[in-house]
Length: 301
Ligand SMILES: *[C@@H]1O[C@H](CO)[C@@H](O)[C@H](O)[C@H]1NC(C)=O
Ligand SMILES: *[C@@H]1O[C@H](CO)[C@@H](O)[C@H](O)[C@H]1NC(C)=O
Ligand SMILES: *[C@@H]1O[C@H](CO)[C@@H](O)[C@H](O)[C@H]1NC(C)=O
Ligand SMILES: *[C@@H]1O[C@H](CO)[C@@H](O)[C@H](O)[C@H]1NC(C)=O
Ligand SMILES: *[C@@H]1O[C@H](CO)[C@@H](O)[C@H](O)[C@H]1NC(C)=O
Ligand SMILES: *[C@@H]1O[C@H](CO)[C@@H](O)[C@H](O)[C@H]1NC(C)=O
Ligand SMILES: *[C@@H]1O[C@H](CO)[C@@H](O)[C@H](O)[C@H]1NC(C)=O
Ligand SMILES: *[C@@H]1O[C@H](CO)[C@@H](O)[C@H](O)[C@H]1NC(C)=O
Ligand SMILES: *[C@@H]1O[C@H](CO)[C@@H](O)[C@H](O)[C@H]1NC(C)=O
Ligand SMILES: *[C@@H]1O[C@H](CO)[C@@H](O)[C@H](O)[C@H]1NC(C)=O
Image 1 (tube, rainbow, N blue to C red):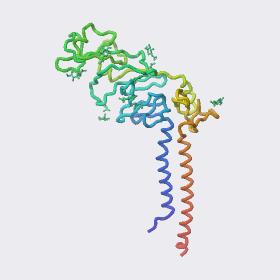
Image 2: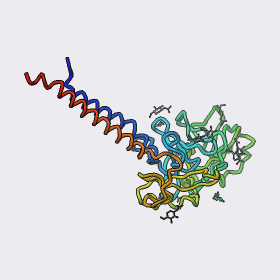
Image 3: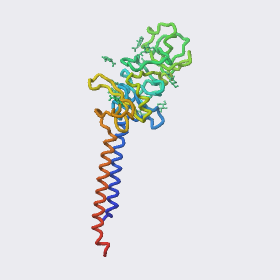
Image 4: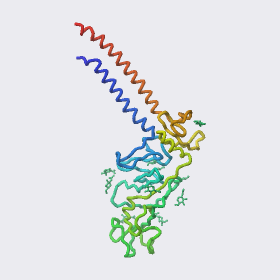
């Protein structure tokens, strides 16, 4: 029982090709800082200066702008040691809307600590936010204010007000705790605290001066990249990542191709794929000739 030689070899060659494609393609696209979407095509598109914590290289975006996907439903960013869900990114005006991340996805979010944009020289609040002051578990409270329905524990009530418009009352004395949280501005006087927390707040990010070249890089079909720690370890520099390697400003820059850091996966992939393809073809042709000579005497009789 013999499988026809050419058929066997042809399938071997094609499975080898398939295998190569499967192993090489993800590597090259990841190295390319390609944009992605955590929610299979329906969520926020994440791209430079944001980068994927595990699928991208560090140079694909700014430091601290690394995000992760969770449960194919949330895009998470870590700011000042808190995880936030990215709801929306506007790349045209450098702004994004994020919301406190609740891993339990409960219908009543509990914000138990104050959030400050610590150590974040790049992010800042925009003027579209309102600071809300919330008071939890108050045992005594003015009767005229609506409490937060899902935060009622027996006689204890919780409240939220715009910080600049908090009703006169000794809240600190009668409430167990209080926090100040940012929220996108809402119609004055009608705060649905839970919805405000879910909708999140808006931040803007600053473009570092090194980054001015991004637009001209993208025009030449490059992906913007950003590198920290140069030769003297204290510099940041812009990269334009193109199909032929990394350039200083845009893909057509002649003589400015830098390969000093980070391998060019596409070139390497193409090289390996190419050589293996040639080998497989040569092997196939040699085997085919051997098959022909083996079978030749049989077919003559
Ligand atoms: C993941 O998402 C599904 C629905 O999309 C939800 O039912 C499940 O609770 C989520 N799991 C976690 C750990 O958030
Ligand atoms: C981003 O990277 C830092 C440092 O490696 C890490 O601590 C942080 O958790 C990462 N952020 C996310 C959202 O994974
Ligand atoms: C956020 O990042 C810091 C380091 O930058 C890390 O220590 C911390 O565990 C991260 N927090 C979360 C919630 O992932
Ligand atoms: C950015 O643009 C979006 C969409 O036009 C808008 O909703 C948002 O308020 C803008 N943010 C800033 C800070 O300009
Ligand atoms: C979280 O809960 C809401 C409803 O409360 C639901 O629509 C949403 O899909 C849930 N998300 C996850 C990730 O479970
Ligand atoms: C903020 O930066 C300082 C030094 O620059 C560091 O000591 C401190 O731990 C940082 N805090 C956070 C929350 O990352
Ligand atoms: C953040 O914005 C506030 C006013 O909204 C401004 O006073 C402050 O200087 C800004 N910080 C940075 C780092 O841009
Ligand atoms: C309010 O009180 C309830 C019941 O005692 C407790 O479970 C909850 O954690 C308290 N909330 C806050 C924000 O202190
Ligand atoms: C949050 O900040 C407010 C105002 O500074 C303070 O009164 C309150 O105790 C803080 N809350 C917590 C939980 O630290
Ligand atoms: C980059 O290339 C330009 C010409 O295209 C040249 O003038 C410039 O000196 C080069 N820069 C570096 C750092 O090699």
